[in-house]
Image (cartoon, rainbow, N blue to C red; front, side, top):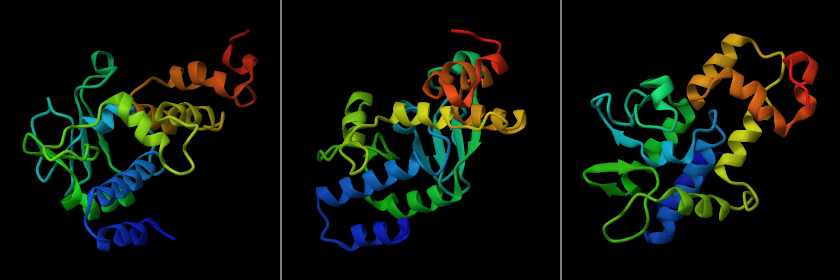
Length: 195
């Protein structure tokens, strides 16, 4: 069963708060499986727009797939970052767009079910994520760590740089910090580190 069918089933069901919850859970799974995983705060702060905004904002242009990040954990080091949203993820977001909550005039991927929606906070997003079937023991940050720890050691520097840009960290972080999650993938002698 593909994600389009699941989204259509949820959309065609009787509209209620549970419907939005199901759509947001599907989007969360897709966000963390269709492209290198971003930090939860980077998904939570992402405004969904139909035309580009000022570069100070974190936004996804749902027409072009351009993702702009200016306000994120490592922004002092990396500055404003532009990345492309995965095509399948962009399609899923557009399918769910009308069902997503608005805050201060902008749609967001993850909002609560209150009459006046609010953006889900980081800690609540982790609880929300762990409520998804199959992810009970994994947080979004666990998935980020797992993703980096499973990048094959012989991956080209060009591909590593692309992944690092999307995840907004350095190649060194990929190879040294995240290597602790999979020691077999990164032999110490190849990285020049020892225990």
